[in-house]
Length: 141
Image 1 (tube, rainbow, N blue to C red):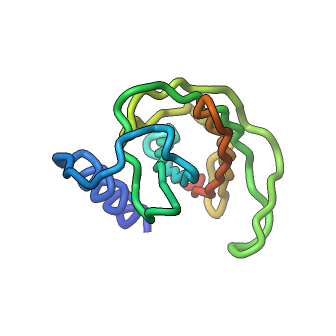
Image 2 (image 1 turned 90 degrees about the horizontal axis):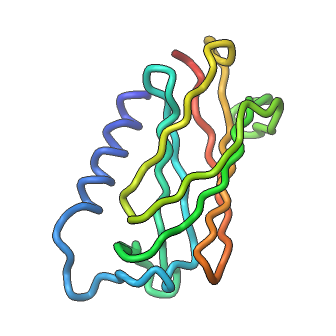
Image 3 (image 1 turned 120 degrees about the horizontal axis):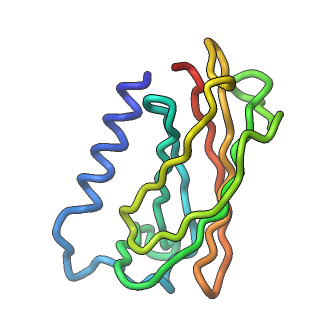
């Protein structure tokens, strides 16, 4: 499963970083939805944010501007289909300056274990709008 997620993230990044086409959306003001994905590698949480325009059903490949991503990372409790936030692991914010910029968060060793998982909640401020998204991830090392 871990290798599958890494492959999906790699293919998404490859798709995003290809040459722009004339019909691509590149204006940050066109973003009206975000999606967050996260996975742990070597004790570090890698977080990716994808930016969408729902009206045109397209990714937004913005390159000019900055966004602020405020995040909270929790341990998760419950089953696969009904996970809930448990204990706060860490929180903070990252400044991002392009669509393909991931960010990384150290997770303390005490939170890792077989069958453990976490939830990240992100709030992205795009100057004119604040968008929210969350994702779950495995804390298996």
